[in-house]
Length: 159
Image (cartoon, rainbow, N blue to C red; front, side, top):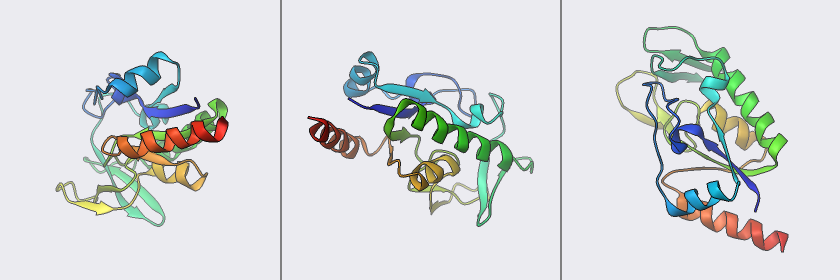
């Protein structure tokens, strides 16, 4: 089975902006972890942001700009983390990624609108977009069925 780049917070690592995790307890994730198929990665920490840190949101998409709650531009750290995620995915031969939904880094379908008012808008986070741009499919924790189907097809292609 191929490798899956996974948000480190899903594996219990306390790397979220609030110093917490987003532990994803699912038998298949546990099995893949035990079999060595999971590669944990947090692009925000990899990009140089501390834990805990102020929440951040994407304020503009073209060009991308990410600002935290106190108005600091954290775009460079988000871009660096995205580049490192692509490098890691390529290095380990990851066929896909399982990333945290709605995150300004990892969200693959929607993120918050940049006003810190809880409003969601369509679009990918910085890392998810960069992985997708490099041909690496990104799933979120609400898409485990699709991920399982994708991985089953990957295995069939290998056999």
